[in-house]
Image (cartoon, rainbow, N blue to C red; front, top):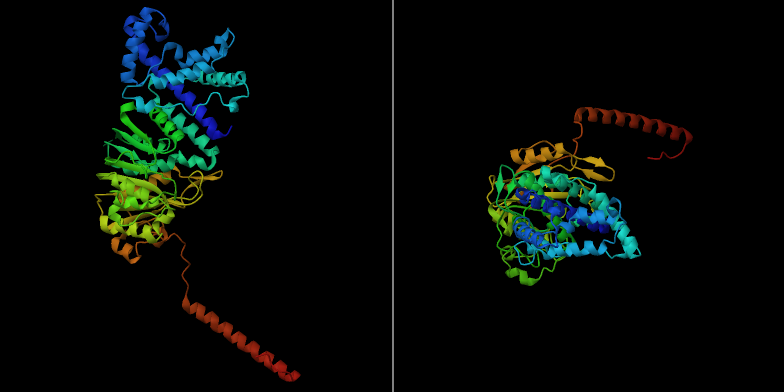
Length: 499
């Protein structure tokens, strides 16, 4: 099967193992006073059922889900592997039932939306896993057995180790998944730039929002640089939406700390009253949208007087994000270079944002070929509703600062540091950055093409006009001498000179 299909299985099983280990650790902690382990409970006795019911209630409140001892990952893996002695058993039906039970355990609870249909992309009866049920069972048993040998070390509170491993796997699968990969994965270094910019000078953020959240890697990166009280996101692809919710939980996010919705952000926004303190996004470049005239009465777009064209939704995403940005918030979004200079409706919206709202704070040019699925050069636009420098815009040209790894260009740590430091200090540096006044922006008719403001070409060596003039005179004298010689020669031959 293709890498992106295999991703759904392997990451789903990793998530199942994670939930199992969290469940066992939590249950064992509850049973300490009784000097018992969760696996010691007999599920079919009345005493065992009493224990399980008490643990279930606490688990749903604390973890948001529940698993019986027999449903734990390592128990199923042992059955599939024959427990080391017994013959292996048919476990596909067990696994399928357990995954459904995890979802069903949350029904009627506060965590229901976060677990609903979470494993629906794991079709254990797909013929791609094997032509016969026995072949499929063998494959699944081997995968579970292999994963069971990996220590996730959750008791050592190394949640980030697991989360980072999960992101590494997603990155590897993204590399092999072709153009679809960009829909759910933002390269690590690029996400660091966005995250560091929107969290500069902050230790805590009440709310962070990504309207094209993908699998959540970008918005989760904010948590590396400051404490985020709640994550909000929206995603229209159901598979990616499921990955995002798994990713949130794998990174140790309690179900009350995130609100991820499934829908098209532009057409059916799900967080309409949200005013986020930090907004980040890597929307699909120049995507199509309806651009229906009905949106002219939508508060997100109405004040601009024009809608982004149906063939390019870039500015529609920007307008949507600005609408959901808090007054004290910072927003950073990845965009194709076309948003800097395209005219017509986009030019009108760009001018309105700069001239009427004065929200645009900085433009950062990135190297080409750093995003999966596209080789085009991209940029980061930074917005603030309350700007510290309302009379200018900062331009940074980081397009020539990267490392080439195989076929992909990658921002190095020093490249990320330089971008963030330059943004923070707001400095002009030869061939790298420039602070442009709003008057300069007006003089350029609101064209934000970075090359208009940051000259990166090498200047020609200075030339001495007097030396050039002298050399030309010498050349002219030589040509006159040559002409006279030719004329004399033609006269002797009694033929017409060629001049």
